[in-house]
Image (tube, rainbow, N blue to C red; front, side, top):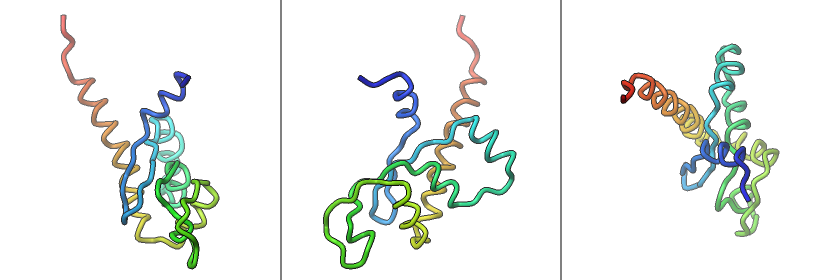
Length: 119
């Protein structure tokens, strides 16, 4: 059975397709944006990718190494970090998807706060 914490985290997830690959990203929380990213100033793309790409689907050994097999490879953050470092075409679209998911969340909160209360 899924815990309430798992459900909250799952609600922050989204699947995005980039360059024919499918990735699971997690929207940053308000606290992460406030404490880590806003206070830190400029954020490295690698930090965003490491923190908020949490899975992939359909990535094979052949995608990861030349001469690999067509066997799917399980997501592992260390493997992802090593692989993505040589895939600059994926950086910007993934970072945009992550930051865009937070922008969408912030907009939803803003709209909800502006709605007049019924009653």
